[in-house]
Amino acid sequence: MPERLILASGSAARAEILRRAGVAFCVIPAQVDEEAVKAGLLAEGARFRDIADALAEAKVRKVAAKHPEALVLGADQVLEFGGKILSKPDSRTDAVRQLMSMRGLEHKLHSAAVIYEGLRPAWRHVGQARLNMAMRSEDWIKSYVDRNWDHVRRSVGAYRIEDEGVRLFSRIDGDHFVVLGLPLLEVLSYLTMRGTLPS
Image 1 (cartoon, one colour):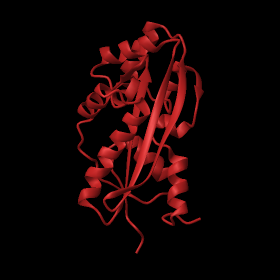
Image 2 (cartoon, one colour; image 1 turned 90 degrees about the vertical axis):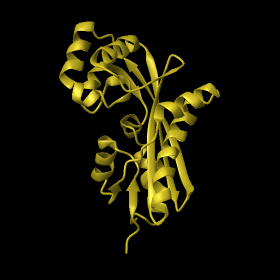
Image 3 (tube, one colour; image 1 turned 30 degrees about the vertical axis):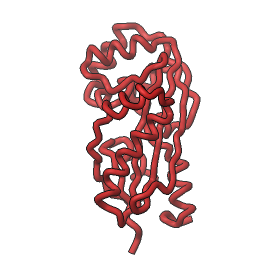
Image 4 (cartoon, helix red, strand yellow; image 1 turned 60 degrees about the horizontal axis):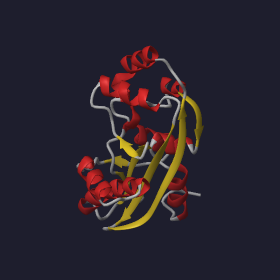
């Protein structure tokens, strides 16, 4: 019987990435107070990549505790801008404010993945991408948010590059899947190496 893989994330984007790669899995979202985890780690002076890693591990650990027989994958993403973390927007106004503040500047995305076997971490990786925003007008940004609110309200930074949001950028350096929120190539490499996926 094939080993069961669980994705411990409610992100539709991450599930779609894995599905398109031909990976068989089921989804069991973990309920984690992400803002409390972030605040605690920031107070301790943790690096942004380590915060992404800790969020991914918090998710995977919670699900793995209830399903120790399965291989469990947790993932999370942190947007670093101006020495701070930007979260998902609270409102359309907040989304516009975030996008306006990033115009013409660079920000970083840290996308972490952690895999648990049983009750212990077996593998982890944090990928990084650098993104430069173009100088779009306030009117265009407002109309972008209005047209895409149902999607961008679930995205850190209030954009999705897989859709119209790619027009916000002048340059993107880094793995496409890292930008989408999952270091897919590294995940697939590990699953293949351990025999979960055929080689």
